[in-house]
Amino acid sequence: MKSYKLVMPEHLNQFGHIFGGNLLKWADEYAWIAASLDYPKCKLVTVGMDEVSFKANVKEGLILEFELEKVNVGTTSVQYHVVVYSNLREDEKKLIFETNITLVNLDENDRKKKLPGK
Image (cartoon, rainbow, N blue to C red; front, side):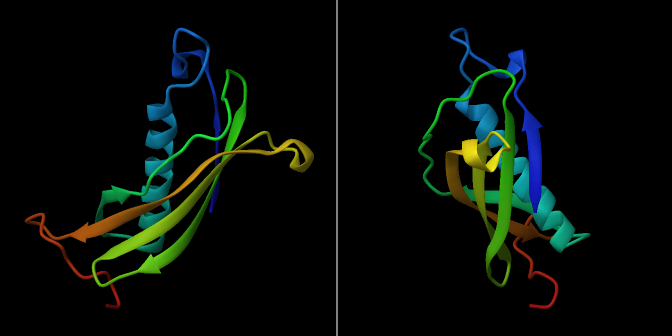
């Protein structure tokens, strides 16, 4: 799955650079959307995100591309590899960061529940 986000002034700190938390929030949100599309009607919550190291600067006006790929499916959880790039032109594309995000399926009492088909 691919998704995009335009970096606006409200996403920046006082020095004109993006708050890293915004990038993490968007990655988490898009991972949840991907999981919800793959497992409709499941109650999915994030339980983990691998280490993140920001590789490039992000400023106002950039369009960010989020690429998500399902990489692991357990009994109750699913993991997505998320790669974030800036710029849409292939010759100017820069890696911002990548990570794995794991979501778990919960029942009505917030206990782990098997994913459909498991």
